[in-house]
Length: 243
Image (cartoon, rainbow, N blue to C red; front, side):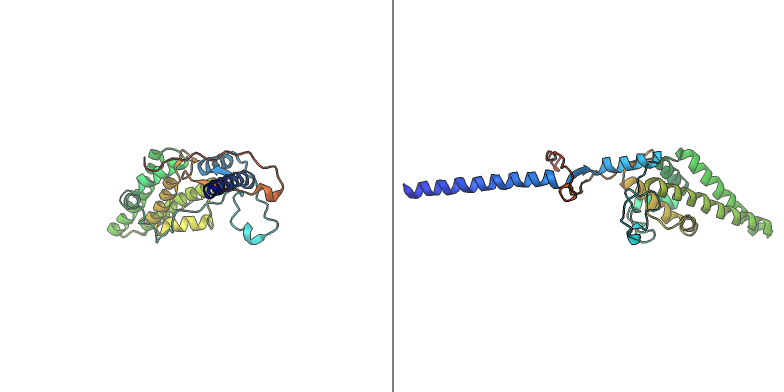
């Protein structure tokens, strides 16, 4: 009988210790970090960028960490995948970029909030047709004026698309080199560049110029270390992935 009572007392102590550890873990969660919905964060950042309300990051004079924050600080994003190596990651987008780049360009511009798909696709199509017809006229007639016109429109196409790529980088705070590089990318390999832009917009659920994000959840900050008052948080709801 004594052995049985000792076993019950040991089991109760073990259960009490587990409850104390669980309560301590919940307290540390509420005091240590803040759970932030990544969709909400990205959407807020995008809307602030549209309104010109970016806040500069305080990097404490660290020039190396300050590189790449030329577009207002906040969240520094990246293009999805490498320009040339990952162009076939999404074969549907790659096929559209090769076979019908005008449609793909218009679709990207509509997602980014730069006017309608039909308007942007039509402008790209007209510029490309003029360049191709000028080159064809030079081959047939051997007149250099058509060659100059064709070359000028090819450059114009690269500048036009590079300009909108730069606008996209500035709007969504995507890391990049320069506007000149954006134009060169569209001149040298427009299909790969369109694929990279489309992957970035679609994978991050960009709709009508609003960056909604991937739907992830992240933890930001440690308020106990900063000496700030901790937020009172409730644990996030558990969602089944089987459905």
